[in-house]
Image (cartoon, rainbow, N blue to C red):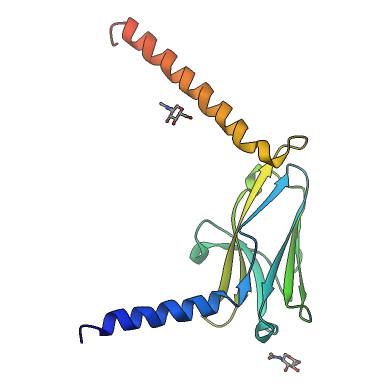
Length: 161
Ligand SMILES: *[C@@H]1O[C@H](CO)[C@@H](O)[C@H](O)[C@H]1NC(C)=O
Ligand SMILES: *[C@@H]1O[C@H](CO)[C@@H](O)[C@H](O)[C@H]1NC(C)=O
């Protein structure tokens, strides 16, 4: 009785690991504002006949479908193609803007046993290399620190009111 829970847990973990191994995608993709990105989601041949989709949302369970095979393969700026021979479906997003940044999911729809793999989309400014993104962030943090220090100083000098 006492070891039942750990054993179940191990079984669950094993099953989970096996299931997620059937679908893989890059963890992070970086695009530029106004540009486009292509994401490849690779899957096990056994899953070739299921519906594939691309959805957006921080949490997979609450994500919103952007494009889906076979019927809704195109949206205004996105599309999805499924190469069943190769075992890979590919999503393209164009005219990227700030609101496109965030978490997305490659999903294979299997009647309540969906396979999913998370992909984070990041954008960088055209002209700056993607490696320079943290330096931009550093600058922003520094500015807000200085601003904060200035505010605190004037707060103190005004006698705390
Ligand atoms: C997928 O569908 C094709 C055509 O209907 C069929 O021949 C094939 O066996 C199916 N493959 C799998 C893995 O279900
Ligand atoms: C100031 O900047 C440093 C380094 O970026 C950061 O760790 C710290 O939290 C910032 N402090 C404030 C008050 O924003």
